Image (cartoon, rainbow, N blue to C red; front, side):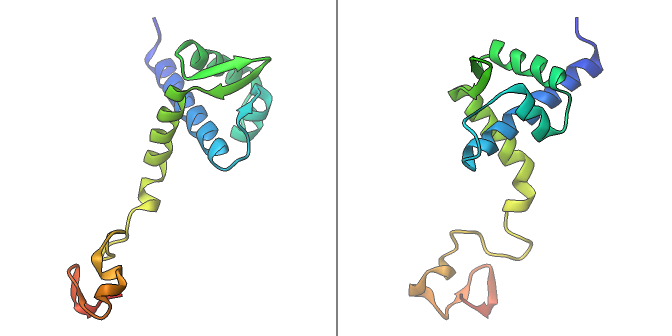
Length: 123
């Protein structure tokens, strides 16, 4: 049986690894990594990262070939969720800002008042 703190550590490293690998793929930095590369990136111990990489292989989130780990489709989906959740506060509109699809940004509505800000002209 896993202790409470050990279970939290496992969840933490699962999220960190999936999010980091998803980001690395998305930025074109790496499609696959070995434990040492990921440990340097996450500023962690190689042996600790290796244990968690192997757990992620067992759970179906990663594949391993010749010591290099790659996200599976399941791992890519999970990594995307972790990445979105981690950066949600940075990617949503600020208070008082229009939503990304607001019609006031459409050139056909230039000069018309924005429904979010009727006191200001449209964009």
